[in-house]
Length: 360
Ligand SMILES: *Cc1c(COP(=O)(O)O)cnc(C)c1O
Image (cartoon, rainbow, N blue to C red; front, side, top):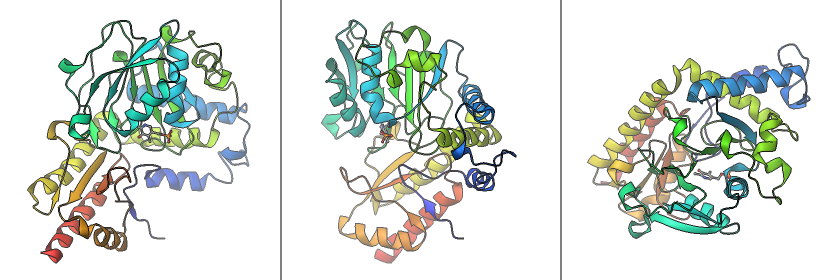
């Protein structure tokens, strides 16, 4: 068996020990004689898996008691509309921060439900920075303020949490959730698709403050109604059971790593290793403002773009996969989520150094 270093932006690398445990438990989970995939979501075994996953997530993120954790489906992109249906209530507008491809999609979906005020944008510099709070033009009449705390494609990460006064703060944290500690109490709602830093695609995590429940629009489908799902322990219909099981194993793995403070330290070391190499190089460069660079998604360019194809081909031959940047921006991107070992980053930097030498 040969495992590669997988730098995919998502679905993405998972901890090898999690995959090994899942393999071991595939045919007979804990003496039940069946796979978790085959189990009723109402069975005791699955209800335990579900409850453990939730309590481990609560422990990792230190989620206050007045927040509900929902395990939903449809991906982060479904939440773009679902959150508007649930949070607008009798308000007719919401504030959005426009920092790249994912916030763009969130905005265009929200426009189906309300008036969207774009209160800050980094479009003027091709989405390479996080607009400073002082430049945001918040409207106190907004139902909520939405931003994308880590733009997966542009590689821009907010290193701070915005202040929005009494207006609930809503965040798409899909691509960096669990990469660092987070003060959940600063948010009205946090959501994330699982396939970046949590587990398999198909599961979406929603963490929502209780007072925001119960305002869903009458046309909101029951399965997407936060209050209905909260009251049913996310089981108003069949939840993505296997994805929840794997997410639960990832949460246990994170606890074994020492929790989020410790994983953050590792993420700082990994991302600095790559950024320091990029910054001293004449051959590659990072387009993102230094203060706002993502620790998870690291876009970079070869100064001579004619070499892009050769770079990707040789990287692949060296077992370094999925380094091509998103089709909307080009160049390269290395996603170095929690489960990417430091050895993967070292192998990438060594390859980049060799490639640079070979072209010199
Ligand atoms: C991947 C991603 C999404 C979309 O997730 P889906 O699960 O495909 O809907 C949305 N926002 C961000 C920040 C992402 O990284």
